[in-house]
Length: 345
Image (tube, rainbow, N blue to C red; front, side, top):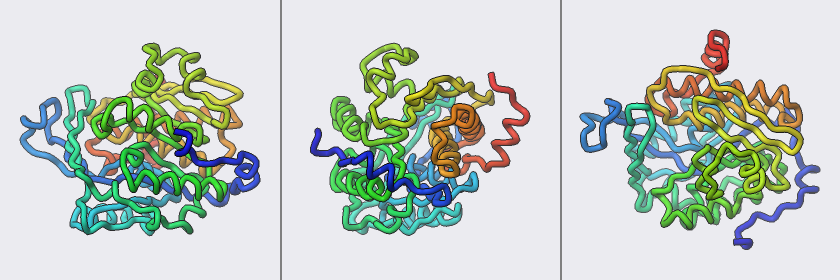
């Protein structure tokens, strides 16, 4: 799928790299309503009631960064409906720049019903046929906002169908050309793709464009076809590309692993009692990107990187103690408080 790759001149990228003062993180993709059962451990059919919670990984990350005191914007499309305007207002209430949000009168805001099993893990049922987020046109991109980004963060769900797919390629090109660090969390949702093969191909089609990639253990297995996601060789041989500055593997409550060209290691998790894991990965990404936004060379200093990853682990830990994604995302004080009273395991 070479034609889909965003052209990249690494020399141009280096010369355009923005200084530490330009710390805006622009998050691109879907924002939706998660309907979460009020009771854990039941199927969707058995759930007595649902609590509506704003969600969508890129939007969660944008709010996460803002709640930690950083500067963020969200770019995507919502339905011209009550849920759409509610979500846009939630961005604004959380100090996220929503000037890149567009509204579609022909499609609804996406909905997802999320079942919580006894261990806090999730199952999804999506309503998007199509939903507004899938219909963002390239002509609707806020180019000025993209050019201001020090970090441009995105996932893979926007790659599933047109016109959003082409819009994401265009946004990546603009951000890259203006010197942004490109951050990618594939955030695999297999149920949304036509097939597993389409998902693998779509996710990998932009893999070698990213400077920073965050993946889960399950995604390693899915993308590489190798059973041992703990094997550094599997990760480095299959997933580390020449332009990559930082690859992070999240391991849930166990913490995370990190790989750069110079070093690799593991940072332990912070122990809490999980209620709902929704948004934990997004809280982690918000945590690491907020640190990166204040020091764009973070991946060159292993000690600082490890501190930032422990902080990101704690962001995820705070989030799993409450239901829903955005409502559970932590403030910096909450994270520092947890780190103060919890010892890494």
